[in-house]
Image (cartoon, rainbow, N blue to C red; front, top):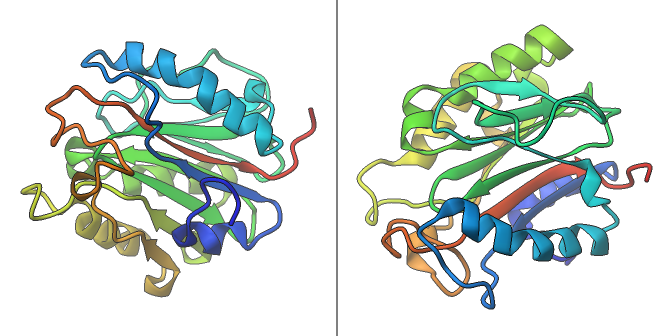
Length: 225
């Protein structure tokens, strides 16, 4: 298995052009209640992981993540990062950029269009799920890139689940994916509860806010550097 490429990402990584990863807990990084501080501490380690997997960190594209439903298209050059006011990113199939989303109980959702090769990655917690960021992503990807949900594979990351949380985020996300037109057999749910395994994952809820952030990544496997 490649580094940080668990089996629930196999459907995505089966396509040779894809680089899909989920970077879990890094034990040596000190925890903090300040999100920016902990991300700053994690960044050098995450950049090393990218380099070891053949991705230049200059291609990383991040969202500000404000618990909303807005998404933005990104590319190889353009605006500064993280992109302000959005919780999701998408790009065309020829883009060399690598999408990145931080989570610590919320779900990261990878979306791959097997026809256009377009990629999407979103952050869906309690608010994002209520606002249906999934539906927003597919509406934008269709309008901008011609992506049709029936051609897409979607993967739901480890996230907090019942009985540790009163909202069943992954079940709601699956329903929204199907409402958008993704076929049921093209939806992969990791089935993992971040709150149930603090040895592997960060959990904002279980660690009472003093925690780290996991990093979902989705890009091309061999970008031009």
